[in-house]
Image (cartoon, rainbow, N blue to C red):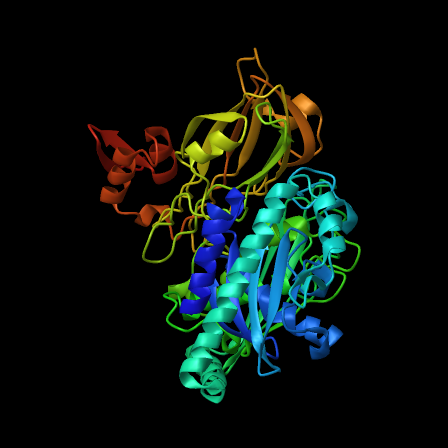
Length: 564
């Protein structure tokens, strides 16, 4: 684990794009020769669920003989075990005395990989070819030498090739560190000891997780949800799941979910699997005491019928399935598991990464820029605690980009940035607050794309808790006095999913991420907690009266008396 952590530090310190060095939208790992994860540094749990399959499927397709000393293989194909097009997995085989002993791996979300929209998030994409350059497993480096032709093809298809070049090299640097540290470990303890220790670590994680699952009551627990739209159509679609707990195993069956949709809200199989892993870990091991490696995945099985929104077939698009359907899948799975272990349950999060993509020619440098921006949202409340405020989704440990860095790199200024009052769902425990922000354009022209969700349906409350506030995305043209929906100003079909809208200097953009859902009846919330929420500005007086039925006098609250 320490080796994987050092690899992550190398990526963070040497990368070019803010999505890596500020957002930490990547993970690093060591794997055995069969492609099983031994140790990882998990900044993005969604990615690690995919990595459990990515290299193993590559080995099944191409065989061990494909890999040679000095190779670095790149892979971002969503139909071959990756999350979505922007996620790139780099794999370096490690040989000792001519024998393949394992791999160093790094996976990260590149900020720009081509496609029809800057930032490679086309929310109206109808096939994978509109989402960016797709790479099956191919060699960036072959026997230690650059594959110059491949590099030329990749960089020619990225709008910000200088950043992609730097980010790829940050990943390669991390792989080199992983290889070097593993060699040092072998030199210190010998190869057999290291391999045996790796197997023991994986087996230990499996035993630990199976023991935790055995503490859960056996049974079949079902849940279903609607997702508001797919970015192309305006109708909702449905996801169903049946979670079966059987001794030390958990199976999630998504049979009955909607057929894959035209827009990019489909999941790949590995995204559905990652959602299940995250939900299971949340219920069984919330404090991360079990090592996260291949052993954790053995007791967990996913049934995801091909051709549905949970397992998209080629050429269906999937860029939003990873960022905005996956967190809702985790919420759905937790809603099912809440029927088994209500004391460990959590209400739904905001459930959207609130993807905002900005691109154009920077007026100061004359070079193309692209920014993939994500801010936090409200997480769901639990039996014991209110939800967290402004936290990135459950399937990610990523961070926002500081305003100073954001404004230095991109032609926008931030006029307002803070927690969105009243956005957390009321309940005995309140949902966490979303984030709101106002940006003003300082360039002659910028291109804006968005892939938000929860703009029509708030995050659902649990056990009597109320829904979290919905997300919002509004625009105010220069000279106007009020913010209005993009559907009114630009005629786009969806208020939250659109591609390549042009804004001009002086235009302002307002967005609010969704709030987390409440847990338990509002009538059971402690009055002192309501008073504290009022003092801290988490809720306003109007919302306190409306949602909690209290009277407010000089900062003190009391339950309203019911009239007969």
